[in-house]
Image 1 (cartoon, rainbow, N blue to C red):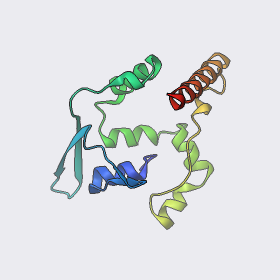
Image 2 (cartoon, one colour):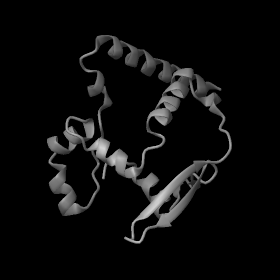
Image 3 (cartoon, one colour):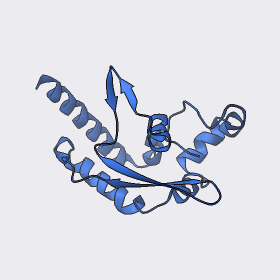
Length: 149
């Protein structure tokens, strides 16, 4: 019902871990899930973190961003997030409209390979564009530095 990584959805809904280059990639070390099935047959999945996390791999900006997302949306249910994503003029709504994905979803199921270009959120704000470019360059430099370590 919205932009979700298929691997994440499969792990949360069906307990399927991703195998990449012979290694199992799983959220099991980081979260625990509780599944409840309602009388209507729908499954409610509640996610809780396991312990504290080492945030040293993240920049101060990234930690602040993560905290802001959790503060703003951490208590939302899936239904509330879906409703928010589907509101008119959201990036998801625009992507679905521009690419006629409603028809695609009806014909082929709820999957697409389209990505959301978040730069549209700041297209009219030159200061935010410069900040985003600076952050992107900083991340590239950090990745190059990490590769040398």
